[in-house]
Length: 258
Image (cartoon, rainbow, N blue to C red; front, side, top):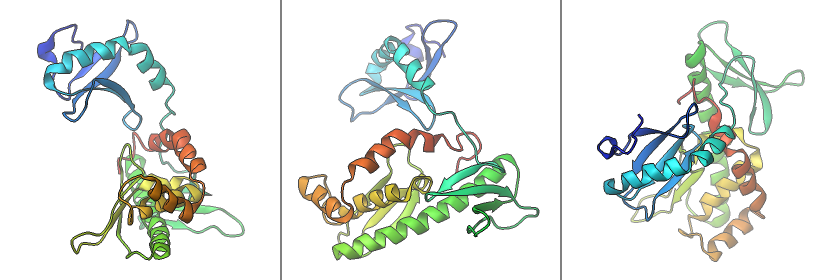
């Protein structure tokens, strides 16, 4: 909606229009009571701008700030990687190796056929359009869970820590999270399933990053010393995620919601 200073139209979750005609930009308003100031950010996964205010009362200020930053918003939205979908015929990278997407001739459980001497790995699924993409995502999530579980187990053993419960998630901002064991409950590690589309050494770094939290819950120098002992120099992996994370989130924006 266009708000044009009509503050009665502003509420948490409202979408306003900013910028100059003929190009108008949509900005979602959000109230975050833990925020200390008004801010505007780009949600790469949803491909939208979000203006955050610390209270409902400050929403008009957030709307005006978004209006003042319309040029910045337009530039950053334009710079986002183009969305792409999982569709038969495409070739994607799965754990660092090419994998061709194929449609099954009949309705069968989706799976990844391993690479052979003659051809690369193949992700085989049935269905069309969004149905095919959802089936492909399920396979990728299962493969991601298998890989991160393997790496977490290796790092937990290296640290002499009990194996945490491992699961995958589809977070917009985080690649992983970990809570160490406490009060008789096992530790819990969560990983973004899209890591399966990254090189193995990047997934490996995230597993080391989270496993280190089994000992240190913070990001203190002691914590980073553990990461270095497990993985080595983490900077190239972090740089890869900063440079390529938006492209991973652009996959399946339209056809595959997971």
